[in-house]
Length: 403
Image 1 (tube, rainbow, N blue to C red):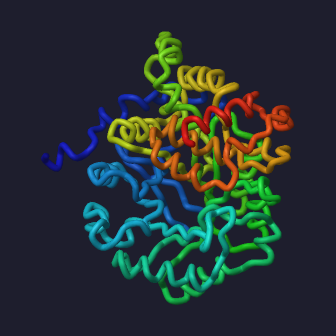
Image 2: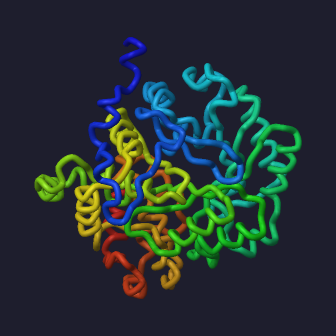
């Protein structure tokens, strides 16, 4: 394959995503400037107070080796979970570039258990990063990210181990910036993600944050994104494609989507443009398995504004998701007498039904101490669900899928 064939043409990039300047202002959304990007490149946004200029679409180490050169050409320059690469697997298309032109993120997990039960251990985290740098030959990681985050505000106050590991590594020139990927922990008596992030903004040296965010999400997430902008803290959305995968493969939904008013867009492209329309949001991590998905997402990210068809498509998706797709708000978890990690279980369902990664979903589900069979069917969770999901019935369904 020639070098030219490896790269995206402008027509490819814009085929699905483009709406044109005439669509500007639709739904009171602003036209977004091509933030330091050429017409066929991803726009860049400032990664909070770090000063890094990153492509709006975040790359990931689990993207296929064939996709990565195309992503580099399109302007992807920030790589999530780069600690997974060693000297052999480090993509040549990235490694050939000047080191200062791309940014590598190392995610650091708890030890001696999973994210809900493992421990923060300063020395082990410090040694982990040093070992990954030795194996990869990367020289340094631009971002040290606490994966999954704190269980509670109290833990953030009382356990500085993760921050101290970062500070030691930074002093040695091995990492530069501190970030956190925050989950909800109300199932184990902890706090919600946005509560923890608000505390960190005022009391901890985190430069960047990552969190669940999709169309129809809770107002607290939008509020956090605005607050983070005022603090000059970067914001990266993850788990963004709520219901997109299953809807796009559902014959009934596809029949509805065939209406001419939806022509020229897709649920995925509309979702990307909706995320991109928030000027306070730095970027998004979007599961990408193949070139078609990448082309669709990138084309949408390059677009200047949403169009009526995009709004209509998201409204259609929202109606489809009602009663069916969990948006991972975790509100139900606080009311469960069995303390089941309902939102985690439905997140694993997403891996299977929206990302088509059944192996990962089953592996994650198998590690739970309480799964869908722990549900007593009491119904206490039902009033808390904004999606009006029959949670007990869905837990049984997910267990049949993943158990």
